[in-house]
Length: 287
Image 1 (spheres, rainbow, N blue to C red):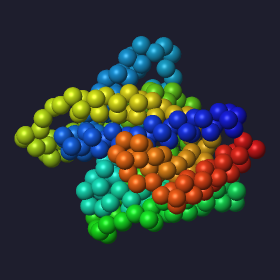
Image 2 (spheres, rainbow, N blue to C red; image 1 turned 135 degrees about the horizontal axis):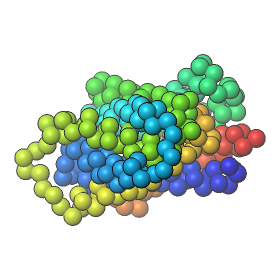
Image 3 (tube, one colour; image 1 turned 60 degrees about the vertical axis):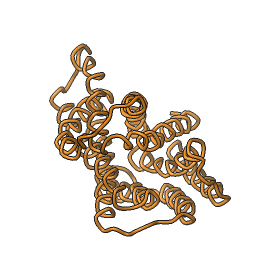
């Protein structure tokens, strides 16, 4: 994959992935986070279901099912479930900082386990990106330091790191959308009891809620997740995880566009630092 293609895919992924939190914010006005996630994954799995039954010559079906279930637990249940839940206890800024630790966790594991070769260049790029994230979030109120929210965010982030590594080590030969089908249905089933338990009796189904869920289904769960698995497959776990450092910057831009959030000079500097870090990482991978 050329460096131009790598950057293009990373940028599209980051925009669509970051938009999930903007669109999800709209959906959370009407239903709880577990209901939003469960319905999103259930509808996505229904759409992807024909691939499983009508795609010819699917090899290693048992492995695909096993890997999809494990990735569903790590990526969708532990990561997204706990990250969304942590927002009930701590600020989005603090969640962003914790989630941005994912590249460090991923790299430490893949280098210790020798899944990938250690690289000072990749480490430098990730550190630069993380400093950019810190600069962006440093001028915004962190809010309360609730241990429950912090623990949830950290466990979710660790789960996502393990999901990234697991796919790279065990599942890159599988069709990404078949994996996506099984991880979606796994999450939908596991999150359903939480969705029903926390659902309010006065829940109202609105046009905004429906559009929010449909966007999350098609653009994020089916589209963005597919791009994410492609990035891991082609660029590796350590490089792929570093792309999430761009998400706070993209999220900030989207929040400015849709919610008229304040945009500071330090935000531009932070975005420049993050972009430089990611360029270093992707440039190294190309070499």
